[in-house]
Length: 251
Length: 254
Image (cartoon, rainbow over the protein chains, first blue to last red):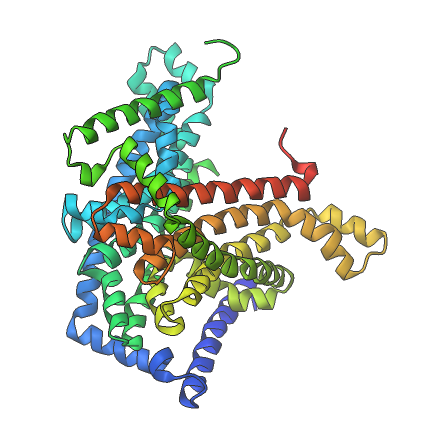
């Protein structure tokens, strides 16, 4: 068996063992199935939420919030990172604020966001944006710093302007760093969507989790929860593949 | 600019000072509703009040205890798991996918479930801290051990070291820098996790306090508490750096 196939088989086996052990414990009363739930109960809850359309609605809401929040973070992150990288004074002046946004538990500000932006969509998108844009900005900055100065000199020597410098040298050369930042940013944006929905919204997967938990419907809690875990893994895998594809020319 | 003034520091503090002045003017003159943005002198007054009343101390201590009770076992379990992943291919292939899934999923989504299982008290917060911290520690330990220089291990073997000695003398020291980076990641995740879990539901703690002042619409106190949490993060990361220089002085940065 090839190494790849072996790791795949064992990985699936790991999940299967967990699910089997859980189901057996629940059936034999080793754990309370009402509190802890069980794979079969979760499967039933999944079918129920899928048939009623609740899951699809939650998923669509969260996906749109995620896309808007991360999209805005990508644009703002690259722009801020570029501005910092191209001008030392901008970098020094903006740096402390970037650090504050990165280091503080931003969700604490959710009540202020709700007053400003209203309950729901705009607040959730803003939390996702705030959590996500810093890692993109910081990585873009690192990318600009890593640009080979001889390439810049070449553009200038052949009569290129500042515009050419940015779009023909700095941005393309920063792509690997920007992508690395975007990958971190994707995870943080998903985290932001869930946080925002739990505290500042009545829609989406994050809100569903809190609602079902408050009703002590444990099996139903697992449905949006597992959906989020799968979503997180899928986003991570997809961005990894995209990164590899985009960076092929560097190999 | 003279040779003794670091321009980064100078420009940075000037920008922060300018921001504080504008904030003060905007907030104190109600150009923007001050209950939403507050302003620096009001925040300073709130900080004194929170500290003097003992409210901050009692709640910070509760959060600190939850954090410590979750983080300490996370270090032990994380390093052991990471070693297991790195040294046995079967263990790694069986359980690493589960860990990676846990790592990419938003941790906060698990909190409502943890509260159902462990109650609204401190246990559910310690478990949140543990889960937030154990995953990056285990993953980084695995990476660190895998990146340990082959030559160190060969040198140990050449001098007749046992398997345990190789782990203790070559693999663990070699992995240390990457493990420390994992601890730094873990601190950040765990702090956000414990505070958010307290905000979700709890009886005590800084997150509980944030929630209380949130519903009361008190921006000044929220800023103080956010500052306390961010400050705690800085202290933790600083302590980790000191520890790293102690444990791995050969790597200390000049």
